[in-house]
Length: 324
Image (cartoon, rainbow, N blue to C red; front, side, top):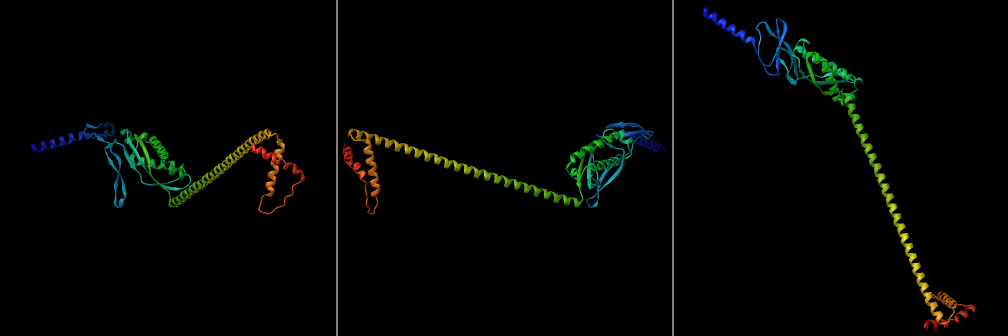
């Protein structure tokens, strides 16, 4: 009998000691109540409590479990363990209405961390459920202020607004909301079809604009090329005319110089033969004229005026000049 009693006492002692010793892992904690009132927050490591007087407070946690068909089930379970690490809640899709009355499905991710276990236990009854409902209502309010186009293109703005709203609201619960991310924004099928048509029309418009700009630039470049070609051709003609005029001028000058030199030499020869230069020049002109009159293959009869006899009589003197 004494052995049985001793065994019972030993078992009770072991139970009491095990109930009074609590080992808390790192990044976890427990809120302990003594006779129904808050007593302490256990730190990571070895902790001692009074058995049957001190009891860890029970809280709710949110857990996602995979179900058949690729779906998942969200379960809220009761536990005494408070996880101090950053946690993520993946909320199911919900329908929200934009400012332009378009119903859209949106699902979000929420990253948060418990920074005050006492507030997380005593300031709110069911923390996961409260965070989920707060996120859903805040998301409806933020999306309701935006049009559909702004919703699709302003995810960063929406995330920032939600993070500020949720962090301010959950501060009294001892929770720090680090960030909010929108995963999917799914407008109705009719809206998606209209958006695709609008996008295609916009692309066609841009293509037409680019083609028009290309044609415009092509015409401009072609006209500038033709302009430059005509200018170059005109410059070439101008230079050619200038060169031809300069050549003719040089030829006239050289002919004049040669004729002047010839006249000077003839004048010297005439002067040396004591012959009148005017008579010589007149005789030379008559000779040239007679050559033109008698040139050709047809037989011609040439009548010479009597006044020309005096000029022709001077041919003998011209002959003597050339002999000299």
